[in-house]
Length: 376
Image 1 (spheres, rainbow, N blue to C red):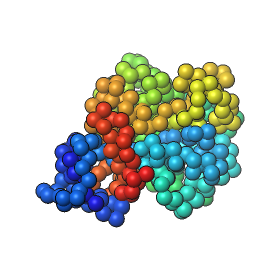
Image 2: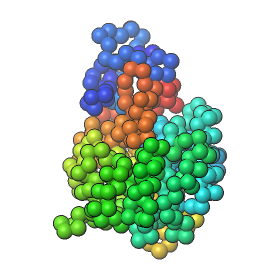
Image 3: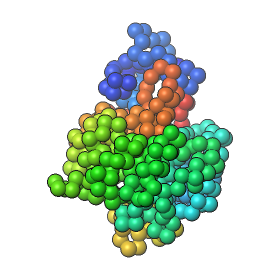
Image 4: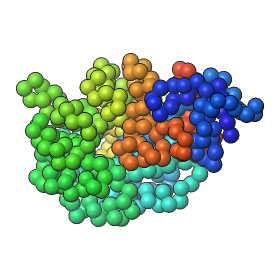
């Protein structure tokens, strides 16, 4: 199948007008010199890779940490409809038994691989190795010290699906944990009260990621720079960014792209089960009661919790905030795919990669979603 007369977001992270081919669920020829007469005319639409959300807890009333397989499939269906064709669901700070149940469900979804659903390409283990002071909406009751054997047992239970594990590097044993598990997955600094030197030590030990930049970490100060400058100085570190317009001010979104560059920012939704629910809804988050008010989720004590936006909305927000569209798309597709080791399969439009792509209007109204070359 050929598609013509499109503006295609290619691997050089720019748009090129032309045509492309899909063969057996993968991208074939890109920008060929000639195309068959029966090629589908996209009439000047934009074609971008399917989005990859590596930090999302849930949507549509379901949360990954529920450990409910039907709920996980409902989440995957919503992602697909929203143009998020790959995802790595994030867990909460919960007992290991609860995490194991959720992780086993994730493995089941990858094994069954149902058609028409967003593809689960890993797990983001957010917690329980966090600072009490910077726990945010994580449940303090279940916080733990870094635990190599406990992590490895969970990793084994889900067939090695954990692609990211979060840790506060100032905790006792954190550096040893980082050095030990970096071969298993990406290790990320998160929910931390670390100072600059502690953060530098973590990145030197093997951390290559920063979870939801600006949120639940010390702010920058000229005499106490903290985690963010330590991450920015290390070219190996990518930083997540929530672009729902509520967790991070638009000016700080622009600053983040200036500091880290388009190649190191990873847009995420950090969405919870409230994503897709009506404003005013109450719900549970990691065993705690929360409420969606004016588009933002909060615990009963007022602590800001998860997002109610999906990644496609966050990408469009970034563009609206002044981020060049090419940079925003890269941060929602290729960059996150790299973090979870899925960049050889998805995240860009390249010959031989899985044909997950979206057709959008020039102003990013989503028109059509394709999974492995088949329209949803």
